Length: 221
Image (cartoon, rainbow, N blue to C red):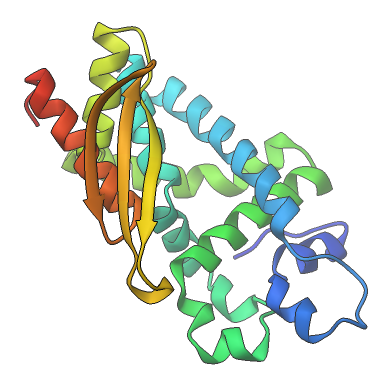
């Protein structure tokens, strides 16, 4: 269940996709993109604080990889599904007819927007009351099943522990039509390129780049 809002207009805005306003230009209000930006930052903080308290034995690198798993698009869309958020979204007709209510990216964005709206409507404590039960259940699964242990997470943990630095990723190219793009991503440590990879999405290409970097660094997965 979504939390109660003192200012219901904030919740309405959080659930409004830009496609809805594009089809209803006469309506007042804004879409949820700015609230999504704020919610992303608030959610990162709440997740980090929760993990810091919950897992005092874990080093920074492991906490970082678990947080990444907690707030990635697939996980956020699951939170939204548990709250039946898809049925509440205000979407344009075309977006709705092409499966927008079940699209992971839209659901994840809407969840972040609701978090941002709740922060503005009330305070950080209200956000924690809303979010932490979702984080707790998911964090338990992530830790017990080691679902955070993908190539990117392992590379980040290793680099922080052994190089005191965080790897960063750069999209080198994206070729092909929109429905069948092929991405090349390179991973850097400082200014040094340590791996590259390709895939049908930026995420898959980044994972491939991280896997190549781990191989070069002789770090096992």
